[in-house]
Image (cartoon, helix red, strand yellow):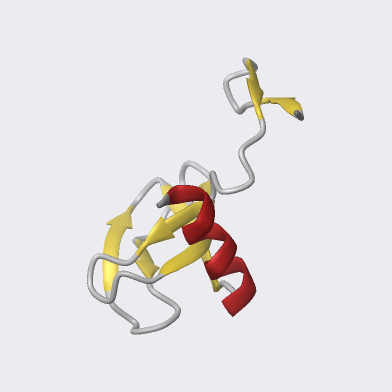
Length: 82
């Protein structure tokens, strides 16, 4: 078990799949990292699926960094979540 401090400074258990989201259009899982945009320099940013280019959500406060998962990662994800 690995633990870390989250962005609120609270100790929590590391979840290997915590940064995985599913597309609301095609249903495929993909990796997503989010970072807060700098106040005063905020632009609309879009959560775009790396497989089908569907916009899942948008934000003026977060920036999304999405990347597809390998076939092996997807298989492991489904084994541990379904």
